[in-house]
Image (cartoon, rainbow, N blue to C red; front, side):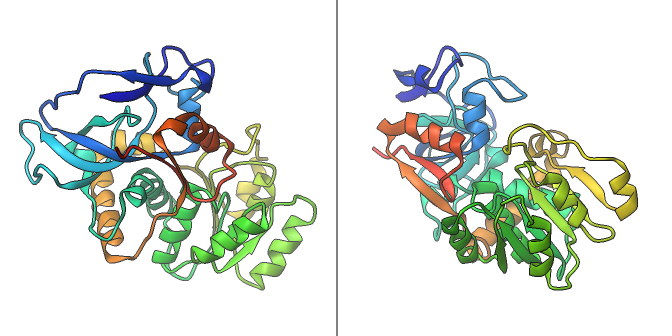
Length: 325
């Protein structure tokens, strides 16, 4: 089978197509014939060795796939050859991958393979952050940074599913339109000068209850200062440049909380809760309650530009690598 691999992590140019043996599923595993792979900022960071957890070499990128089950390991029930599947795994840039049955779900018939590949990790991050860490309730107002990206657009979706009033922060008119089409109630630019005043006018007397922040960029402190009493600022990632600091007295003065959201450790330490969330999200996907934002779709031969697009974060929605024959 074909895969995309690199023996070192110095540059995205190190990645090339290789021929590898077809993997055989072990106990508790499915083998998936991949149709589509999701690509996010973290995937690109890992591919460059810049993430906090470095992968073993040689490295095959990709952690979210959708496709069809073509082999089943011992001890796995509830699956048949030919079932459509969405899974979180490793080595996704390949024609066939192995995935734990525990982190795989049946892809609803109303969802494309591309939507499936855009789905699991971003939506699990959003639901864990908003429901578990942030305790979002219906009627609250939340601000989403990076609202046109994969995890930001998922947060809009999950926030609206919880009955929240969602304000989307994005950098361009194209991204504003994208966020509104995703269901955001309002949008705000990310120009630093006068930003808090524009947000206050947009809130129109509402209290800002929560900030969902995958960027933690130049507006980090301004957003925290804009929270109402008892507000929560969710730290989801650091795409926005140098990691910012926050004067600790602000948490006391506002009765507000700065809360970390780490979906990787959530899956590691709270497996049962993560599994329940995946069940909930898959049901929402099948029922049309959420709809992943599929961004630009790259052909298999364009794996390099696909990783570069994931790193740049300028394309609305989730970047997808097509692995169709």
